[in-house]
Image (cartoon, rainbow, N blue to C red):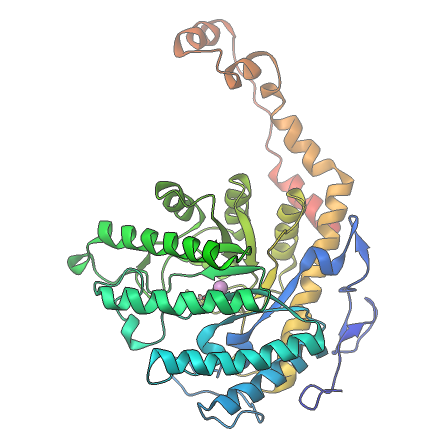
Length: 434
Ligand code: XUL
Ligand code: CO
């Protein structure tokens, strides 16, 4: 039993009223031909879970972390790692994600920071071996330190580009050493606050150059994990170059990187971009680039990245509908890039937050599988587009028509009578299962 997390969450079924039990997530239960754990591939993130203090722009941290002595020592960092793996075990989470600088402190020089990281990674490796937990992806923090004020790969100062390259180099090696299945690029400060001081063409080219170097280094060290880019439109900068799924795909195509990077899509980032997460997922899926998901949500009344735990069954159902439609994750997973509210400061709140989100996704999985099994939703869409399967539509799709030939058809085909889109009926169908 864990000292800090004495309640181990296990599956008790939908009638359980135990706040420390799963009502729906039963890791071994088979849904749509696969165990739930293999569909959902849950991961906890180190940054919010272990390093989130609860501080906000108006107030200090509130989280109670009695295991943490508050210092920047390597020993304290190692102690935290042990607590994190206890937490994973208590919650039944089998994967995790980290930034280099969440794990270990930033020191006076790059070499010292690397040495500190190596020591903490030794503890991480030992804990992974002890518990069997796996690394979903790693990343480097290229946004917190003041040197990144103007960006990292897109900084106006090439010395910053070099520092960022060195940091990613080591973070990628550590990810590889720990058997990570992926590596993420999120461009926290890769954007601008004002175009008056910004050479956007150059900055985007530099970002592409940086990513090509990352691909080169990945090959050089024999890392076979998947590289991802994580779209977000803004915050901290006014505009980020990786704004949304479509702009990332355009960027990757423009700079010949689409074969090497997939997308890691985050729910709250989609909201900030003015999209539904389902839209982002479908854009990526249709380009063969849906890699992984940062599972969280925003708040409709707060227009910023609140990173709340996902508990909305409509959201989890939509995610699982798209995931099942593409046959599920390969290297990716559902990483809870989510933090407790500032007012939920007890260690046990970490458990409630993650367990509830896992249950919400387990229900989303069961609901989506049932909707697919039912078949009416897919049938409706198929029938709606049936005009394109043969005859006129088939010929247009095959490229057999021109404006001239269609002009003749349009003039002779008579009045067009449309069929209803039946949105409300389809929403009711979803509710039959939710
Ligand atoms: C920030 C965010 C990051 C990335 C990894 O909004 O989502 O935590 O997931 O750098
Ligand atoms: Co994220």
